[in-house]
Length: 130
Image (cartoon, rainbow, N blue to C red):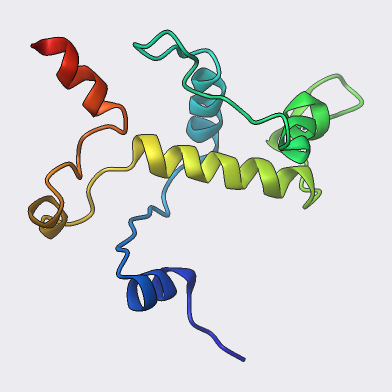
């Protein structure tokens, strides 16, 4: 069995350095995902767009990814772990966290990649300041 990680494949075969976090925090992360659906970019387009062909993700956010409701009317603290909607919604949440909210993990990255700490939309803001 090949135990090479996705990160090592990206680095060793393609020269792509990746960053990640393990301390995202479920509650805070879910709040950020919910807020990202309401956020509008400076170009007047929603920050979060989901392609119509991503039917499983659309189904997850249309009610498949939800909290279990108890008999007393309260809800569980974590989404239902069904490994269908949960997995796709978690993968989407991780991508949002690591694309929009990750902090630089090492100082060398700034030297190698001058735009490392800029937000993905940084190029748009540069055009506005001149």
